[in-house]
Length: 252
Image (cartoon, rainbow, N blue to C red; front, top):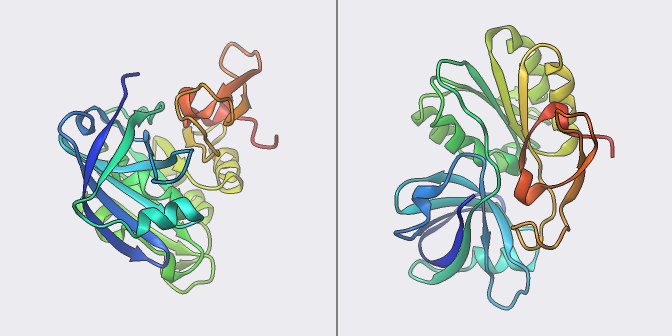
């Protein structure tokens, strides 16, 4: 894995939903190295620990980072102005394994939706299922459609799209797809893995708290079971955040 920490220039900082912001940052060296499912670690002025943000999209000289304000660090990020410089460590982690000539179903829940956009752009006509608590939190629907994806929107309260959960749609569509990639809260990922088990391959991106982002601090360690059958304390920032669902102990 190749990564570096460099200065990026903030080009855009847009509020795209209630408490959710979209950054576009530019740098001539690192964005072109990014792969779908990886993340960036953003240095915030006055904070010791960086903020890990999934890579929503990337091209040769820019990264798009979509984040939700959850504390002081992301609050500071939400108030930054275009033209300011920010130090970013990127690209980090192991991303999604996308193969040509396969029908992918990409599933995102809440703030787990952003990394699925870059992933959708690597797939041929993917099915994208997104889930949110309510319509005020819905993001990126037009972006997915522009990427050529078939989109299905669900909300817990029925205020937009289908009243229900992403798993309801997955059960209906399972026979039409070859593989599933998902990112979101653990209960959602556990349910998706249960539906896919024994039927289609499922890759999941875990949302764990991280410190360093490069495997040095062990904050994000979790128990996994690789294919050799031996339990292993895996570091989500380095061995993940993407795993084969069969490798993850969801209940621990």
